Amino acid sequence: MKILFIKRQKLLYFVFIFLLFFIISMILLSINHHFSFAIELNKTSFFNIPLTTTLDDIAKSDEKVAYLTFDDGPTIKATGKILDILKEENVKATFFVVGKHVKEHPELVKREYDEGHYIANHGYNHNNKLLYKDMESFRNEIISTDLEISKAIGIDGYCSHIFRFPNRIYVTYIY
Image 1 (tube, rainbow, N blue to C red):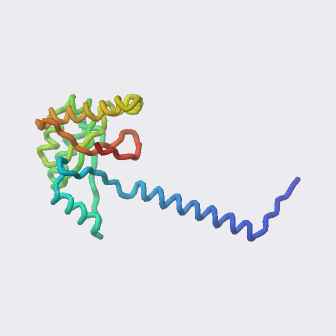
Image 2 (image 1 turned 180 degrees about the vertical axis):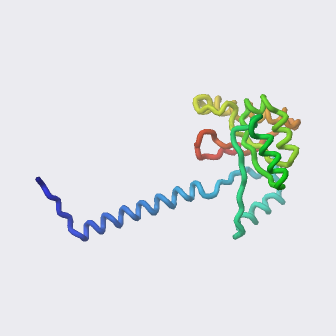
Image 3 (image 1 turned 90 degrees about the horizontal axis):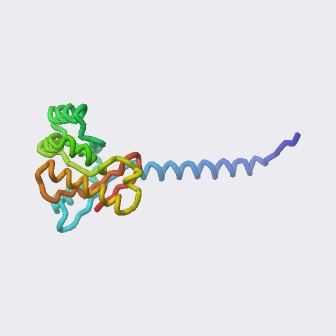
């Protein structure tokens, strides 16, 4: 039987390095998930200068702000109920919609839009194998969803400028 002896100084050094690594890892993880905000601002974008000022003010404010988002809809089972509650509470949200569901229930997307909620892109099929097959497939998922949103809300060429990756992929793509 072998017994391993480690001097206390080396053990403390090892514990210190381990804790330092752990703390840095937790900080990096919290930064990546703490505040997620991505938009494109340019002369031709949907957003304008007054909104840019508002976004700057929000970012600099000490006031706590929550952004309410919903993914994967619209669905007959939940979307109408969610919209009723939001209307009753006078709350606005962002709906990250799936193109095939928009095609199935355009009236729900139209209601979301008409009630002042933001409609954003969450892919057409919500299927990683199709979305990440290649760049062309990825592009088609986004374009197809924007086309369905355009039809549903009655605005030609609608582009949300915001894409939320489906299935817990934590990256935001701005196009």
